[in-house]
Image (cartoon, rainbow, N blue to C red; front, side, top):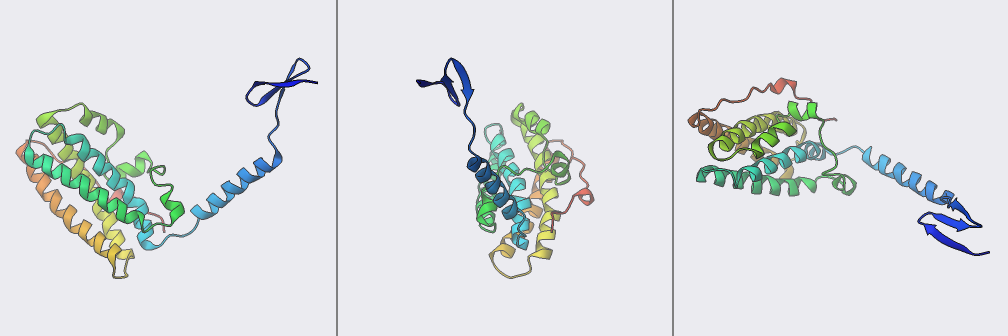
Length: 214
């Protein structure tokens, strides 16, 4: 009896369409893979690993905001600042990835904070990013400064918690301390620039920020 392919996953046999069955071993292999992934993700992280897992998506949005501003800003100093934010925080992301085990590195970019958690960390909403994308010149500069000031304000409690947990001297603690110094100083600079443009700082309550899991 002749049997030919009718379409992927089916056989045409004796004038009837018969669907091929997935072998049991494939189902078992998939279930086993999911179990392994679940067990790996459940493994406890080091203090610096916990910090990196929370800070990497936060840094990633700072890079995104800076890159949005670059072609829109009229002020050269602000363009230089945005370029520095993008380059510095991208380099810090690369460094923090090394603090995570390989299976956690694979999930970076797929694990994102919820809208509520993101707002509590001072991050911009999807709507706020869309508004920035629609602006040019002075209006874009003002919006960027408002968003980035709040973004930096949201980072400071995260950094403070990281310093309280990462006690061992070494590169992780040095990098977290550098973040603390640079972002605190940048907030003051951005507040001055925002005031010069007649803008107001967005409200932000750092006490509402959820701490990252232990």
